[in-house]
Length: 66
Ligand code: FES
Image (cartoon, rainbow, N blue to C red; front, side, top):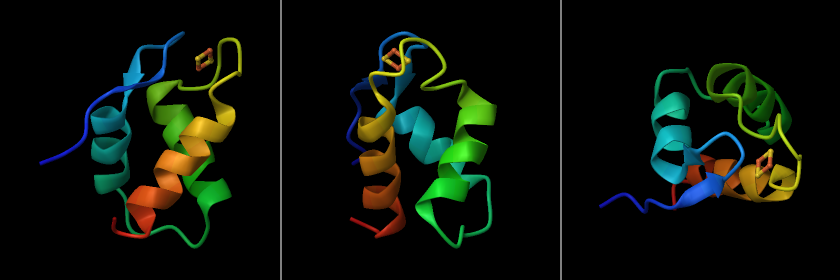
């Protein structure tokens, strides 16, 4: 079961939304390029920016397959 909670409140981007967005791509080489792509797709972390680290953590967690 996927965890689902709000990662970016400004843009209403949930954990599941990030996971789904990652799913639509080939594996990324690194978290930063994944972040840039996910940001383009979901607009997460384009408001206050306070969730930046949280988004990075979620992406790396998903990429590590946890
Ligand atoms: S909480 Fe994500 S940009 Fe503000």
